[in-house]
Image 1: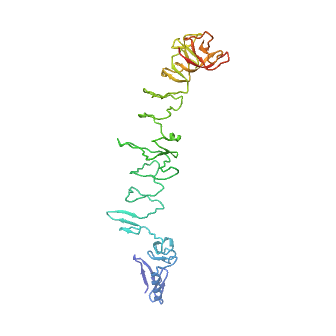
Image 2 (image 1 turned 90 degrees about the horizontal axis):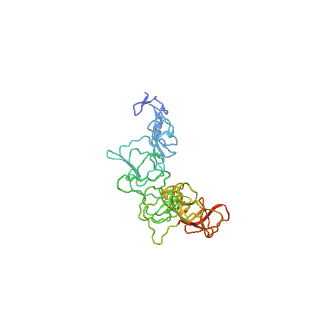
Image 3 (image 1 turned 120 degrees about the vertical axis):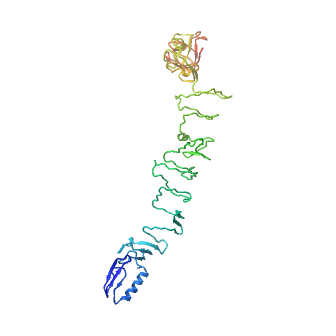
Length: 407
């Protein structure tokens, strides 16, 4: 009578005829009734099961759930499907030597899993994983959850990102940044953008605190003293508002260029021993003229406006000389050089002259806006414009530097 072999799930595995042994349905030899070598086959099966078919390759004709001890890597493995002979497809259960691998398919742990360096709990009151040492070599995604100091004491990483440069994120708390990228460098480096400090909380003040120095191009900037790095100005924004200070100490106040106008408002006093100095030499004031005049033109009071070019020789109405390099200019808001030229009241100025002039000679009007050297007996207290400071050897028209004073 043949034997019918049924698997654990109730399905029929095979039928074994009397007096035969089946070696193709499983990894074992299954003897039928009255098989002559029954005892030998049974003992062999016991040995194979006891050693879990220990070999470097999987046993032949395996059944799903069958154990195999892989002597190649000293690992017990489980057959995932009937007849699976690919060793890589078998599931590893445990390693019997240090450094071996343990792999599983999908494993559901409903209780607690504890090992030497991690504890995982999954109960009604707790969903937690505690690791004494954790290494993630690929990607770890934590979605819609918080990582707190209770979980991570120290985080070592080369990148923390929100996902993109335009996605906002929040860092809350008091943090200390240390690092060193060069000499005098221990900083938080900003590749692009900057630090934006909001004062939306109301009356509280916010800013950047430095207990020692701030740096620009590697050189320290001490706001308590001075600094020598001229490049610092490139890191500071231009402030167009009012700077309120009871005292301002600096060696230079500038508008940026000698052609750029600036304004000083208020009543200022020079202290004892203090002085104002200038590059140029004359004191001038703007007066309304009947037309635009070149620098050096000798003018007199009169005409349809306040001043006009001097008309006659030895004029006692002579008033001054048009200046373009004055040290101090009064009444500057009256108009432009075209409508209100600056008239040198006193000091050095270039004067349009006619004929030869010797240094030191007194200058008088020559008419048509020019001056000339006074001949002997011509100079009076009313017609002298000033005195020449240089020689002129030609008879034609030219320019002579002179010291002038309005009479």
